[in-house]
Length: 114
Image (cartoon, rainbow, N blue to C red):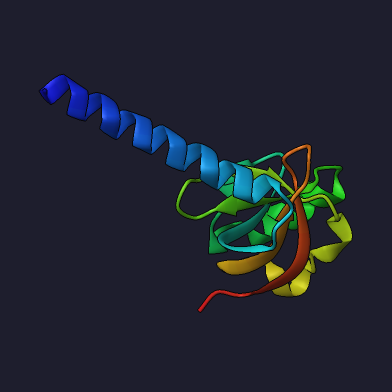
């Protein structure tokens, strides 16, 4: 009986995980809390102290990425011109947008996190 409950619990968790992933990939607008960094440093660049380094690396060819605060997952930003280095770096932000078929994020809006 205990094995049945464990199996049922694992199945429920799997279904929930797949459901959340499907919702995010269906192009529905979502808001994430995190940091704008660049592709060279990724999650290591998710801090207020990293602003100048991010700007330098981006000028040297790195692309902007978004680092989710909770999961530390790094998402490529599809529309690179949506990032304003002066106002979006060096602080935690709320990014509103949707994921694309390639797993990157299409940004609609970036605002300071509250």
